[in-house]
Length: 123
Image (tube, rainbow, N blue to C red; front, side, top):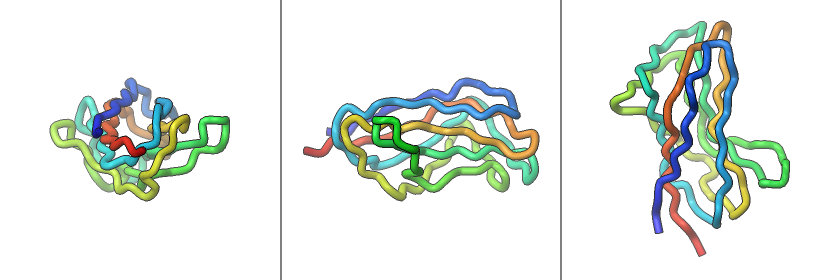
């Protein structure tokens, strides 16, 4: 069974870190991860955001990236197409917490939007 988990990152000021998270209900494989912003995010080499998809063990352990981070330092993110993450550790277990984390450089950039995770349940 394949389904989509959507995590919404609400609007944050340019100089604010933010994350949103969900608990994984069963063992699964992340087949794709795409971020679709509410509005276009223009690249800026000085003031930019970095978006990271991370997971932890669900018991308070440290978060680790499960996909290559996306930065707006050199690439625009368009709201009509979004941008895809390159998955590096797509296997998740029941009880793990998955999150989208936003960090910033210099003054940063305001970013809001939805992370769409396509998950395939495994036995």
